[in-house]
Image 1 (cartoon, rainbow, N blue to C red):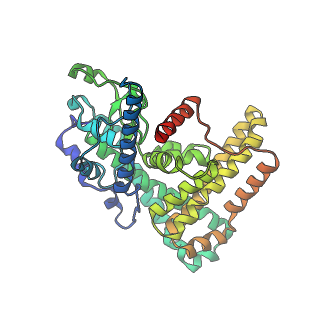
Image 2: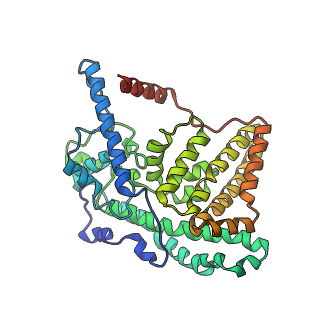
Image 3: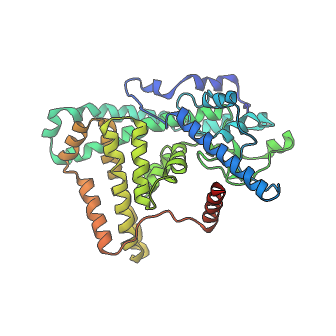
Length: 400
């Protein structure tokens, strides 16, 4: 959406890439390399437009309400403008062309709040930054690469991955909050609350644009479309599967929409493995990325099979205890996988994992085996009837 009512000073945030705050700590890739990701999304939006036009012709030019559909195919100049939009050129969250267009065509941009949402979003960042500096100082990553580290007792080696992952989370929390604040300062990604926007995808309900400044000012807005991190959800959700949804949320939407759904498998675990493999490649060629990302499908399978086999048979108190244990193991699994993500090399990653006896891998295999023996079902993402009908309709139009 268009400009905002806050003063020009707020827009200075666009001139401060978050990684500059941590010049000695490379943040790596904060998103799926914005250019290709944006263009993949735009191609899909154009395809949806063509499918809708064909459907309109087949129905005798009877137009139906469409959500998030482009008005026409963007020109080359419009495509370049979208690809190099200043809001997302540094570390901004992923956004669709429809989101970009809604921002440009906002009829009453002065009615869109930005200062208060910005301050409300930004307030935890200084605390997270201090926690990052403190934890990375007390538990430097470089220590893990030294021979002396492996002379320490096993409990110390096991514990060390916890503060390393803590520091990792804190720096990304700061970076992504700053990136979101950059969008908010520009009024980018603001939609009425009634539209029920979701991260990356935008509105999920039709919400007609306001017809007057007074109506626009009376609406309540949110910036869920460009929300990239749910700090509380990341730290306190129970399952590995849920932890992925709260982390890098706009990119998770992109991966689910364009990689997961087009995977050449039907199994949820295999589709997840395919998505993680391509995500690792997107991050770079360091072996640590692949070792970490490809551990996730094993954890997903283990928790899915064991949970379906046991949890539903427990009492309410037993289920609560199960969830606490599950949460603890989920956090330790992410601690473990983070080491590959930050150590990067195969030798350093495997050396550390071997020093703690690959315990997450073995525990996940044991849980998976137990779940299979007890008759647990495969974790899957079941489609609702409406989703299945929509999918079948799209496939029919493609065949035509």
